[in-house]
Length: 320
Image (cartoon, rainbow, N blue to C red; front, side, top):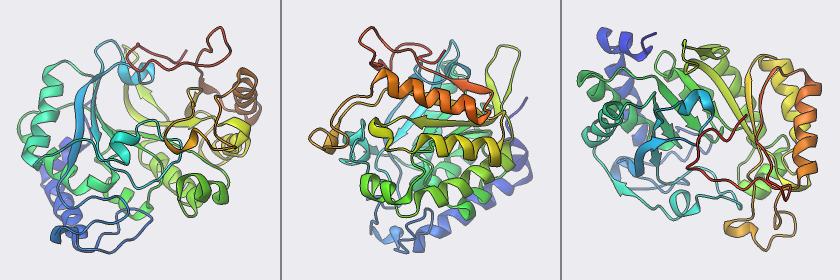
Protein backbone atom coordinates (compact mmCIF):
# COMPACT_ATOMS: atom_id res chain seq x y z
CA UNK A 1 0.00 0.00 0.00
CA UNK A 2 1.61 3.25 -1.10
CA UNK A 3 1.66 6.24 1.28
CA UNK A 4 -1.27 8.62 0.91
CA UNK A 5 0.94 11.68 0.49
CA UNK A 6 2.25 10.46 -2.88
CA UNK A 7 -1.08 11.18 -4.55
CA UNK A 8 -1.01 14.70 -3.13
CA UNK A 9 2.56 15.11 -4.30
CA UNK A 10 1.74 14.00 -7.83
CA UNK A 11 -1.23 16.37 -8.01
CA UNK A 12 0.70 19.35 -6.65
CA UNK A 13 -1.54 19.54 -3.58
CA UNK A 14 1.26 18.56 -1.19
CA UNK A 15 3.27 21.62 -2.18
CA UNK A 16 0.20 23.83 -1.67
CA UNK A 17 -0.29 22.39 1.83
CA UNK A 18 3.37 23.09 2.62
CA UNK A 19 2.96 26.70 1.51
CA UNK A 20 -0.22 27.03 3.58
CA UNK A 21 1.61 25.81 6.66
CA UNK A 22 4.62 28.07 6.05
CA UNK A 23 2.25 31.06 5.97
CA UNK A 24 1.11 30.18 9.51
CA UNK A 25 4.61 30.94 10.80
CA UNK A 26 3.87 34.65 10.27
CA UNK A 27 1.33 34.48 13.12
CA UNK A 28 1.71 31.04 14.61
CA UNK A 29 -1.47 29.17 15.56
CA UNK A 30 -0.21 25.64 14.91
CA UNK A 31 -1.03 24.33 18.39
CA UNK A 32 -3.54 25.16 21.17
CA UNK A 33 -1.31 27.89 22.57
CA UNK A 34 -2.17 30.22 19.65
CA UNK A 35 0.93 32.34 20.34
CA UNK A 36 0.29 34.42 17.18
CA UNK A 37 3.89 35.51 16.93
CA UNK A 38 5.93 35.98 13.76
CA UNK A 39 8.34 33.08 13.86
CA UNK A 40 9.84 34.15 10.51
CA UNK A 41 11.21 37.19 12.35
CA UNK A 42 13.05 34.93 14.80
CA UNK A 43 10.51 35.27 17.57
CA UNK A 44 9.72 32.19 19.67
CA UNK A 45 6.60 31.24 21.61
CA UNK A 46 5.87 28.52 24.15
CA UNK A 47 7.65 25.91 22.02
CA UNK A 48 10.82 28.06 22.01
CA UNK A 49 11.18 27.60 18.24
CA UNK A 50 11.56 29.99 15.31
CA UNK A 51 10.97 29.01 11.66
CA UNK A 52 13.79 26.51 11.11
CA UNK A 53 13.45 22.89 12.21
CA UNK A 54 15.75 21.66 14.97
CA UNK A 55 16.58 17.94 15.10
CA UNK A 56 18.09 15.98 17.96
CA UNK A 57 18.65 12.74 16.04
CA UNK A 58 17.59 10.76 12.99
CA UNK A 59 18.09 7.02 13.33
CA UNK A 60 16.43 3.59 13.07
CA UNK A 61 14.59 2.98 16.35
CA UNK A 62 13.64 -0.47 17.67
CA UNK A 63 11.80 0.40 20.89
CA UNK A 64 8.44 1.41 19.46
CA UNK A 65 5.33 -0.77 19.20
CA UNK A 66 6.02 -4.03 17.30
CA UNK A 67 4.00 -2.95 14.27
CA UNK A 68 5.96 0.32 14.08
CA UNK A 69 9.52 -0.93 14.73
CA UNK A 70 9.25 -4.31 13.06
CA UNK A 71 12.60 -6.02 12.52
CA UNK A 72 14.24 -3.19 10.55
CA UNK A 73 13.41 -0.30 12.82
CA UNK A 74 11.32 2.82 12.60
CA UNK A 75 13.00 5.72 10.81
CA UNK A 76 12.77 8.10 13.74
CA UNK A 77 13.44 11.83 13.57
CA UNK A 78 13.44 13.41 17.04
CA UNK A 79 12.62 17.11 16.91
CA UNK A 80 13.92 19.45 19.59
CA UNK A 81 11.65 21.56 21.82
CA UNK A 82 8.00 20.95 22.69
CA UNK A 83 4.68 22.72 23.26
CA UNK A 84 4.20 21.00 26.64
CA UNK A 85 6.11 21.54 29.90
CA UNK A 86 5.77 18.17 31.60
CA UNK A 87 7.38 18.06 35.04
CA UNK A 88 8.31 14.41 34.51
CA UNK A 89 9.68 14.56 30.94
CA UNK A 90 12.21 11.78 30.37
CA UNK A 91 13.64 13.59 27.34
CA UNK A 92 13.87 17.05 28.90
CA UNK A 93 17.34 17.65 27.45
CA UNK A 94 15.68 17.55 24.01
CA UNK A 95 12.22 18.94 24.77
CA UNK A 96 13.11 21.64 27.30
CA UNK A 97 16.82 22.36 26.90
CA UNK A 98 16.67 22.23 23.11
CA UNK A 99 19.41 19.68 22.49
CA UNK A 100 19.82 19.39 18.72
CA UNK A 101 20.85 21.23 15.57
CA UNK A 102 18.96 23.48 13.20
CA UNK A 103 18.51 21.98 9.75
CA UNK A 104 17.22 23.29 6.44
CA UNK A 105 14.14 21.75 4.85
CA UNK A 106 16.42 20.20 2.22
CA UNK A 107 18.59 18.62 4.94
CA UNK A 108 15.47 17.29 6.65
CA UNK A 109 14.38 15.72 3.37
CA UNK A 110 17.80 14.10 3.13
CA UNK A 111 17.32 12.55 6.57
CA UNK A 112 14.05 10.98 5.45
CA UNK A 113 15.65 9.49 2.34
CA UNK A 114 18.66 8.30 4.36
CA UNK A 115 16.39 6.43 6.78
CA UNK A 116 14.63 4.79 3.85
CA UNK A 117 18.02 3.69 2.46
CA UNK A 118 18.73 2.00 5.82
CA UNK A 119 15.66 -0.20 5.32
CA UNK A 120 13.39 1.42 7.92
CA UNK A 121 9.67 0.61 7.77
CA UNK A 122 8.46 4.20 8.06
CA UNK A 123 9.38 7.81 8.78
CA UNK A 124 8.53 8.46 12.43
CA UNK A 125 8.19 12.16 13.27
CA UNK A 126 8.59 12.61 17.04
CA UNK A 127 7.20 15.87 18.52
CA UNK A 128 6.52 17.31 15.07
CA UNK A 129 3.74 19.85 15.66
CA UNK A 130 5.77 23.03 16.10
CA UNK A 131 7.85 22.26 12.98
CA UNK A 132 5.07 21.06 10.68
CA UNK A 133 5.69 23.72 8.01
CA UNK A 134 9.29 22.57 7.66
CA UNK A 135 8.34 18.90 7.76
CA UNK A 136 5.78 19.07 4.96
CA UNK A 137 8.08 21.24 2.88
CA UNK A 138 10.79 18.61 3.39
CA UNK A 139 8.33 15.87 2.51
CA UNK A 140 7.80 17.47 -0.91
CA UNK A 141 11.54 17.40 -1.52
CA UNK A 142 11.85 13.84 -0.17
CA UNK A 143 9.03 12.57 -2.41
CA UNK A 144 10.86 14.11 -5.34
CA UNK A 145 13.94 12.13 -4.27
CA UNK A 146 11.97 8.86 -4.18
CA UNK A 147 10.62 8.60 -0.63
CA UNK A 148 7.85 5.97 -0.48
CA UNK A 149 7.64 5.12 3.24
CA UNK A 150 4.53 5.66 5.38
CA UNK A 151 4.55 8.77 7.55
CA UNK A 152 4.07 8.36 11.33
CA UNK A 153 2.89 11.40 13.29
CA UNK A 154 4.19 10.78 16.82
CA UNK A 155 2.74 13.50 19.05
CA UNK A 156 2.03 14.41 22.68
CA UNK A 157 -1.63 14.82 21.72
CA UNK A 158 -1.91 18.55 22.45
CA UNK A 159 -3.15 19.37 18.96
CA UNK A 160 -5.60 21.60 17.14
CA UNK A 161 -8.15 20.06 14.80
CA UNK A 162 -7.61 22.94 12.36
CA UNK A 163 -3.94 21.98 11.98
CA UNK A 164 -4.68 18.27 11.73
CA UNK A 165 -7.11 18.88 8.88
CA UNK A 166 -4.24 20.26 6.82
CA UNK A 167 -2.57 16.87 7.29
CA UNK A 168 -5.55 14.92 5.92
CA UNK A 169 -4.20 12.67 3.18
CA UNK A 170 -0.59 13.28 4.24
CA UNK A 171 -0.18 11.28 7.45
CA UNK A 172 -0.58 7.51 7.19
CA UNK A 173 -0.23 6.52 10.85
CA UNK A 174 -1.16 8.67 13.82
CA UNK A 175 0.67 7.81 17.06
CA UNK A 176 -0.61 10.27 19.69
CA UNK A 177 -0.38 10.30 23.46
CA UNK A 178 -3.44 10.74 25.61
CA UNK A 179 -1.88 11.91 28.84
CA UNK A 180 -4.65 13.12 31.16
CA UNK A 181 -8.42 12.96 31.56
CA UNK A 182 -8.55 15.88 34.02
CA UNK A 183 -7.73 19.33 32.67
CA UNK A 184 -6.65 20.72 36.03
CA UNK A 185 -4.07 17.93 36.39
CA UNK A 186 -2.76 18.58 32.87
CA UNK A 187 -2.37 22.25 33.75
CA UNK A 188 -0.55 21.45 37.00
CA UNK A 189 1.80 18.80 35.64
CA UNK A 190 2.29 19.80 32.00
CA UNK A 191 1.20 23.44 31.89
CA UNK A 192 -1.33 22.47 29.20
CA UNK A 193 -4.63 24.37 29.43
CA UNK A 194 -7.71 22.29 28.52
CA UNK A 195 -5.52 19.34 27.51
CA UNK A 196 -8.21 16.65 27.54
CA UNK A 197 -10.66 18.78 25.55
CA UNK A 198 -8.09 19.40 22.82
CA UNK A 199 -6.86 15.82 23.01
CA UNK A 200 -10.32 14.28 22.58
CA UNK A 201 -11.09 16.46 19.57
CA UNK A 202 -7.68 15.66 18.06
CA UNK A 203 -8.08 11.90 18.50
CA UNK A 204 -11.49 12.02 16.84
CA UNK A 205 -10.03 13.86 13.85
CA UNK A 206 -7.07 11.48 13.62
CA UNK A 207 -9.42 8.51 13.66
CA UNK A 208 -11.63 10.11 11.02
CA UNK A 209 -8.60 10.44 8.76
CA UNK A 210 -6.81 7.16 9.44
CA UNK A 211 -9.31 4.73 11.01
CA UNK A 212 -8.45 1.45 12.74
CA UNK A 213 -4.97 0.11 12.25
CA UNK A 214 -4.12 -1.66 9.00
CA UNK A 215 -1.03 -3.87 8.68
CA UNK A 216 0.71 -5.56 5.79
CA UNK A 217 1.37 -9.29 5.52
CA UNK A 218 4.45 -8.92 7.72
CA UNK A 219 2.52 -7.29 10.55
CA UNK A 220 3.90 -3.80 9.89
CA UNK A 221 1.52 -0.86 10.24
CA UNK A 222 0.72 0.95 7.01
CA UNK A 223 -2.25 3.09 8.09
CA UNK A 224 -4.39 3.88 11.08
CA UNK A 225 -4.39 5.14 14.66
CA UNK A 226 -2.39 3.85 17.63
CA UNK A 227 -2.96 5.65 20.94
CA UNK A 228 -0.38 5.70 23.74
CA UNK A 229 -1.12 6.19 27.41
CA UNK A 230 1.52 6.48 30.13
CA UNK A 231 0.21 5.29 33.50
CA UNK A 232 1.21 7.70 36.28
CA UNK A 233 1.56 7.01 40.02
CA UNK A 234 -1.46 7.73 42.18
CA UNK A 235 -3.64 7.57 39.03
CA UNK A 236 -2.73 11.16 38.24
CA UNK A 237 -3.46 10.50 34.57
CA UNK A 238 -7.09 9.50 35.22
CA UNK A 239 -6.60 6.34 33.15
CA UNK A 240 -10.06 4.81 33.54
CA UNK A 241 -11.82 7.83 32.07
CA UNK A 242 -9.39 7.86 29.15
CA UNK A 243 -10.06 4.23 28.26
CA UNK A 244 -13.81 4.76 28.52
CA UNK A 245 -13.57 7.70 26.14
CA UNK A 246 -11.54 5.70 23.62
CA UNK A 247 -13.97 2.77 23.68
CA UNK A 248 -17.12 4.90 23.47
CA UNK A 249 -16.10 7.77 21.22
CA UNK A 250 -13.21 6.48 19.10
CA UNK A 251 -13.42 2.70 18.60
CA UNK A 252 -13.28 -0.43 20.72
CA UNK A 253 -10.90 -1.74 18.07
CA UNK A 254 -8.39 1.10 18.33
CA UNK A 255 -4.90 -0.06 19.26
CA UNK A 256 -3.88 1.29 22.67
CA UNK A 257 -0.36 1.01 24.06
CA UNK A 258 -0.45 1.16 27.87
CA UNK A 259 2.99 2.25 29.01
CA UNK A 260 4.54 1.35 32.34
CA UNK A 261 7.92 3.06 32.16
CA UNK A 262 7.16 6.08 34.32
CA UNK A 263 10.01 7.07 36.60
CA UNK A 264 10.74 10.42 38.30
CA UNK A 265 12.74 12.67 35.99
CA UNK A 266 13.40 16.36 35.53
CA UNK A 267 11.26 18.35 38.00
CA UNK A 268 9.38 15.28 39.26
CA UNK A 269 12.20 13.86 41.36
CA UNK A 270 11.29 15.76 44.53
CA UNK A 271 7.59 16.22 43.75
CA UNK A 272 5.30 14.68 46.41
CA UNK A 273 2.90 13.35 43.76
CA UNK A 274 5.38 12.25 41.10
CA UNK A 275 8.52 11.42 43.06
CA UNK A 276 8.31 7.63 42.88
CA UNK A 277 8.16 4.91 40.27
CA UNK A 278 4.96 3.19 39.20
CA UNK A 279 3.96 0.03 41.08
CA UNK A 280 2.96 -3.23 39.47
CA UNK A 281 -0.49 -3.03 41.03
CA UNK A 282 -1.06 0.45 39.60
CA UNK A 283 -0.13 -0.74 36.13
CA UNK A 284 -2.23 -3.91 36.30
CA UNK A 285 -5.21 -1.87 37.51
CA UNK A 286 -4.92 0.38 34.45
CA UNK A 287 -4.80 -2.62 32.13
CA UNK A 288 -7.89 -4.01 33.85
CA UNK A 289 -9.73 -0.71 33.33
CA UNK A 290 -8.89 -0.81 29.63
CA UNK A 291 -10.31 -4.31 29.32
CA UNK A 292 -13.41 -3.39 31.31
CA UNK A 293 -13.99 -0.44 28.99
CA UNK A 294 -14.24 -2.90 26.11
CA UNK A 295 -11.00 -2.13 24.28
CA UNK A 296 -9.94 -5.16 22.25
CA UNK A 297 -6.45 -4.25 20.97
CA UNK A 298 -4.43 -3.49 24.08
CA UNK A 299 -0.62 -3.49 23.99
CA UNK A 300 0.89 -4.07 27.42
CA UNK A 301 4.44 -4.01 28.76
CA UNK A 302 6.07 -6.56 31.03
CA UNK A 303 7.10 -5.64 34.56
CA UNK A 304 10.47 -6.76 35.85
CA UNK A 305 11.00 -8.90 38.95
CA UNK A 306 10.76 -5.87 41.23
CA UNK A 307 7.30 -5.08 39.84
CA UNK A 308 8.53 -1.98 38.01
CA UNK A 309 9.04 -1.69 34.27
CA UNK A 310 12.59 -0.52 33.66
CA UNK A 311 12.69 0.95 30.14
CA UNK A 312 15.44 0.05 27.74
CA UNK A 313 14.63 1.98 24.60
CA UNK A 314 17.17 0.12 22.53
CA UNK A 315 15.61 -3.29 22.97
CA UNK A 316 13.11 -4.51 20.44
CA UNK A 317 9.39 -4.51 21.06
CA UNK A 318 8.82 -3.73 24.74
CA UNK A 319 5.12 -4.37 24.15
CA UNK A 320 3.67 -7.86 24.21
